Amino acid sequence: MPLGLADRMGRLSPSATMEVRRRAEELRRKGVEVIDLGPGEPDFPVPDVVQEAAVRAIAEGHAPYGPAAGLPELKCAIAARYREDYRAQFTPEEVLVSCGGKMALFSVALAILSPGDEVLVPSPFWVSYPAMAHLCGAKPVFVPTLPQDRFHLKPEAVQEALSPRTKALIVNSPSNPTGALLSPAELEPIISLAQKHSFYVIFDECYELIFYEEGPYSAAPYRGENVIIVGSLSKSHAVPGWRLGWALGPEGVIRAATAVQSHSVTHPSTVSQRAALAALTEGRDATAPMRAEYLARRDLVVEGLNAIPGVECLPPEGAFYAFPDLSAFFGGDSLALANYLLEEAHVAAVPGRAFGRDGHLRLSFSCSREELRKGIERLRAALAKIR
Image (cartoon, rainbow, N blue to C red):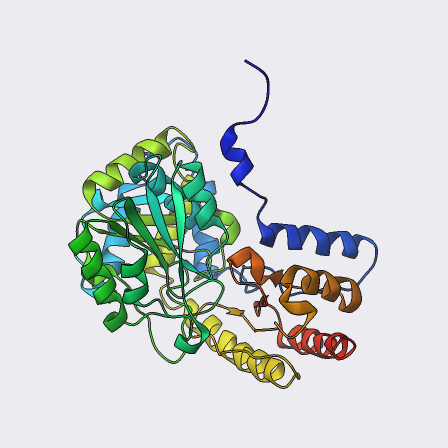
């Protein structure tokens, strides 16, 4: 057999968000001041109670291997959180603790997807969803969401995309990159479709606690054989690098995803799990001040963007991204626009093409208001040169 890479690698490309970070860092090393609006991570300090629990876990020697599905006490705490917040009755056997929400999603995907299956992916989408489908040998089928609907997923669009090969639908709410937040009234008909046509709905709720006028909302109350929920502490408690997330769902699916995890990462860091236990018990209120600051930043960014001729920006309902329409520039080529802004204005943004929607940029407001004001002014000046 000749040497070479697996065929699946031909369907993958590096993460666009990581590429933006890499290029911004290159400019910084050259002494350039870059306003980086690309990162999808909080800029807040880790809550004290979470830090202290991690330090205590290290001091107490929590270093040995643990159970593949996670520490029993943490699984119980996760189930208790959804019971208290949403009256959802999950058992510990229906909980998998994983190395961040991304690993939970990937383990679930490997557990339920077979070659030839189709996965419905609402577009715009988080960049890793199609990659996960391809790595499982499945085919992503994109379901459009529209600006006039505030990018909310409509059951009619899901119905139209269904085929005999449909195995799963991935719903990200609040959405990265659009900030769209689906209400219970919108979740229910989508889950009804899944029950009627026998496919899974994977709800990626990693931004669940970053909401604004309405929320929080979860699909947890609709738990059943079709519903899988993925959550994370990365955004809510500002610990993206600690890699701690979870999945909740039918016991058979969780058991299979646990087997995948046991043969890949073994289990999440025991130190991170001890910190997560503190976050879910003593640190439940840590997200509120972050959310208040994000709201102020959101309003600043949306107002500033909409004041720029040729730019239109819907206010996101959750998460911490703006997804403005800049199709008036560069003929709607978001990659060319992002490159121009990085070189001309030294502002880093992620092109909408990476999320399945050219003509847009994703701008993160997970940085200070001062940085955001400076970034918007640079955008205004750079765009004025090509208007």
